[in-house]
Image (cartoon, rainbow over all chains, first blue to last red; front, side, top):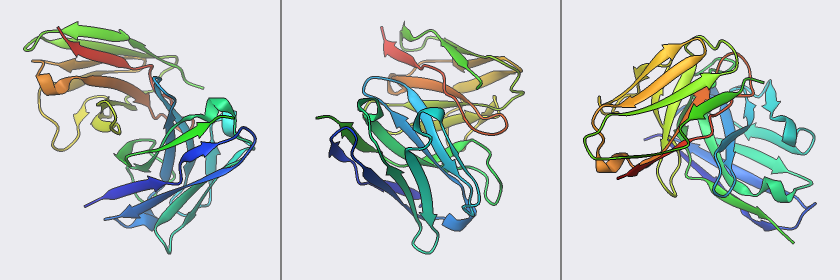
Length: 123
Length: 108
């Protein structure tokens, strides 16, 4: 069965850093791109970042460019989101989600989601 | 960036009712439009992609239509388990991939 499991969330002070992880199972991880999507408390969904299946290209939403970095370790079936210089507006549940088409640049269609991990930025 | 305008933001309907949600893109996105269902405290679930294709295992009372800039999501006979927030999302071309603001569906 296909699974994504996020971890690493917590409470962090503004300006500090936090690293999120996404563990994948049940599919050939190295063939799929992975997205990060977040949801602020009581708000809608916001696409955050995407990395190609082979790690060769990365994309970010404007509000996190220069602060967030996505990476992956295909040998461990793990995907990461390094978040630096955190702000109160980064407070959200962060989901990792699989891009639906294997071996392609990106379809943008998110067919499998993790359960999310909560990040709270507060002093 | 492509903006997605979804309406209504909330909707109250009775069991058995036909429910319709609309989503408008700020530019032509062909049929690169999906619909997700999110129940409270849960992750979103893909229901429909390519504007009208039902994801495997999704009940046939859910449907989608449209192309270009105007899209519609319909539940033909509302069931109690359909209570959730629904989001449209465009995935035309490269990122960013944008979502609509969401429609919170409640039982009357």
